[in-house]
View (tube, rainbow, N blue to C red):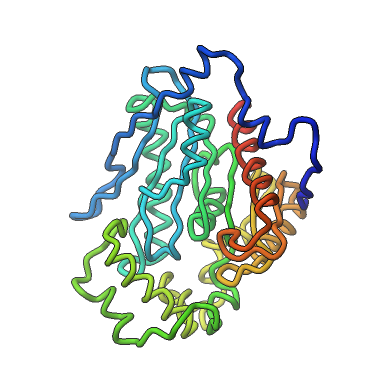
Length: 329
């Protein structure tokens, strides 16, 4: 189904979310910052893959919001949790778990998917003891490549999450757009310069907190998009000549009636991840009777850039409302 923004009311959505409590005592409690701890959820040879956990003080068992960062599977970090997600978790006293994963091209998508499965296995096995997580209530959310991995968690993670929120994500990584030569990714990056960013040592990275490293690898991503090599570069599989081999990594091809409820948000003018990626998901979700919403921002680019600020604010408020509702069940 598509989501149509609500009109103005006596108490608009954003105001309702801001005024969740009128109790001074509760408000003071909800203003207390979350405490961050860092955990290694898996080790592969000498590579430690980590998660940051933000939770309220105390030992009360609380539901979980999992954040998965974006970055084309090539760049990004668990440190990049959106402010609105942390503010929601602070206000509602949820646990927030932000995941790193091994980055391409040093590893490929099958290994990234394994990291996702291992992260959730660790969360279910260790979360209740380590940070008093209620793992029967988990909403997974992420943006762009993180939105893709969020969608993928609905098909490869067991037990399935309670619900999903995908910001400008994609349900396929073998579509024509993933192999097309893009004209929307900046000044051409020479092949030698692009490859130098990922061939320095061959070391497997789990984040790009080093700004220089992130910038260099961003150039590598632009080169892949400019030359049509992104899908092959991050998956290691030639989707055009090996049809079907990437199917298990494409959520849109693996929807069943048991897929978790999902809210998607996407701009119609997105030149990085095409808007049709979300409408294609919506069509398959409808076919299988899965509850879903698609928040459409007309004219918005990737990350909702250039979208009507009022519509963007309304959509973001709806996202927070959805997460809260799903974790209250």
